[in-house]
Length: 102
Image (cartoon, rainbow, N blue to C red; front, side):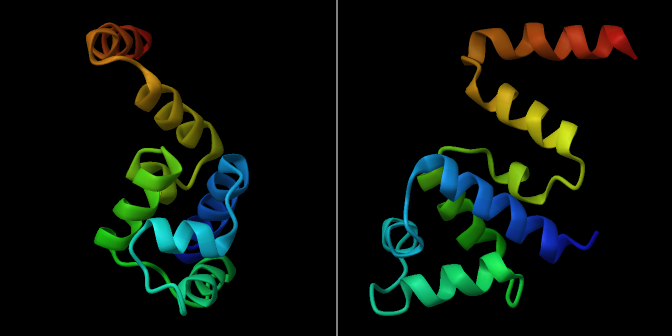
């Protein structure tokens, strides 16, 4: 699967989970209100891929780590989401636990 379709899929999933319209997401991410909906629609259809800075702004609005938008494997995407929700004090412990499994 290409990064375009993965990014499109992850973006759509995160936006839907956040309960935002394409227009709301675009505006909150700093995209001009008149082009917010069409741009997000193009990203979600895979017609265009947001550059990294735009993806970071979108991820921030969606409350997901930016790497989530690029994770090709579903289980890796889930790990990224779970890790991103942990308080910083627990991240080292979680990382050590993952390393122990390998």
